Image (tube, rainbow, N blue to C red; front, side, top):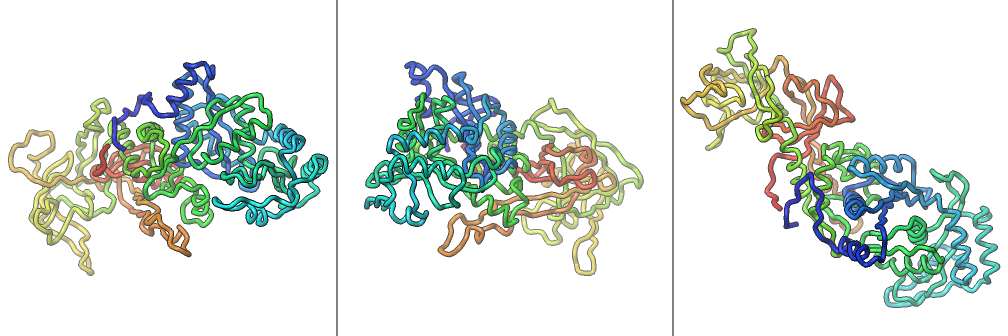
Length: 557
């Protein structure tokens, strides 16, 4: 996580081992054109880990003037849905990429069936009547060989007939499977007669009810790569042990094109669940507000929270591509959104937990308009006018009756500066019957107006505020990590480790002109951090702001 900081608007050409392989293959003439693919299964929404793979595949092809396909590995109709297909397409486009070809594994089911028949005719596949549990029990261990199925030596004719009858729907789910005939004593358990096809009587989102047998992913995936002419099939390290079977399928199915598989370490983030199965459980158990909940590491969740595609792409480039596992500090991702927004976001004021202040010596019924920079770090964003009058709101925690030493905000008799406005001094405090502070009564010094060149006394505290009569009521959502402890004790689910304080909802006010804010607009609220207008829950009557990230972090690259 150390190294050169990549600028957000520039694609990196820094070396990694996959890029070096691609460069060498093109230079040697091994391939004429690089073809990559991003092949998600449409059984859930994409997350930040997928973003790393998307960036790697698309940017490699773009750098070397090649092509990238978006392919849906839809071989399991029970878990897949059109909703996921559409969400994946939206996420890839939002990240800034455009695929050259859009494909579905299910479009190749006919050819896959024929290739499986070829394996049977070559004596390299057979129909097995054993149950899933029996197959699992006879597969063996890492130190002991597996046991051959009693159906392993069926004749070619019987296997062809049974496989055809599987396709025609004669058998129930789980009644029969088609297995490869390789080596039950292989030290690589993935070569111990893996399953190629199973019976599944389920409606498929793309092919409807045309099929009741479906290829296993490990069999379908290499065929898809070969059919599409993929040159560099890039996947994560957990598929490294599958590579010998990947090569076996392409070779024995006599595919006219031979792609090659390369593995890299997937992305792991601290305090973040990266399992699609677990993320789906969070949604199904209603622990979150859908796949796009801003606490989720999904691309749609990050988008709703307020992350930008530029920040995510820069993050993915910076973490790089490696062969060894590691865990990336989530603060690194936060660093890149700060870097992206610091010159883009309008800087404004919001009061999240309001306390009313009455400026007793300010003229009643009068409102003046003060000048404020929209972003001091980006003068091109210009200035705005903000109202100021007798009544304002400040943050409740900017006042204390009995402050500790070195407390520089408001307390009885103390004077502070209001951002863009005047000095005010706390003269009187109003409490309710329970002793709670409900109102402050202050005086202001008209000679201290911001920008007036006042060179008199100095104050150490500066407070943000919102003028009361034109303040816009708003809801603020503050997020913390969803997982408080990533470990799972014996007998416990990861759901037992959810952070009960992952979401805090506050009701306060924003500046008057914020009533025009639209979903997806981003702002830096003075002292509070960067916020995004929630595109799902905001209304004209009550805008909702999601905190993207706080202003500062101890993390550095």
